[in-house]
Image (tube, rainbow, N blue to C red; front, side):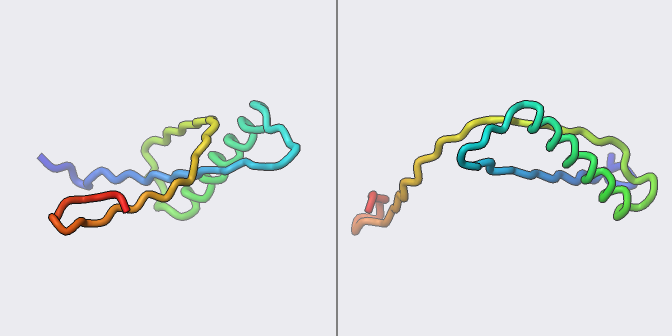
Length: 86
């Protein structure tokens, strides 16, 4: 049975690409930046959304290294209708 009002969720994802030559970004800086971003998002949401509408807030942080090779892969249809790498 449907709930009235229907539950709504707002998900905000921020991805900071931290590539500063000659700089080290350690755990303390990351945690401080994360806490500042979460606090700013909460303040902005409370200013913009109706009073009492925020039921629950969850946060998540992922601190990872990503090495991505930028290979461009193109596919095209061959004369027989199949896919081939072009």
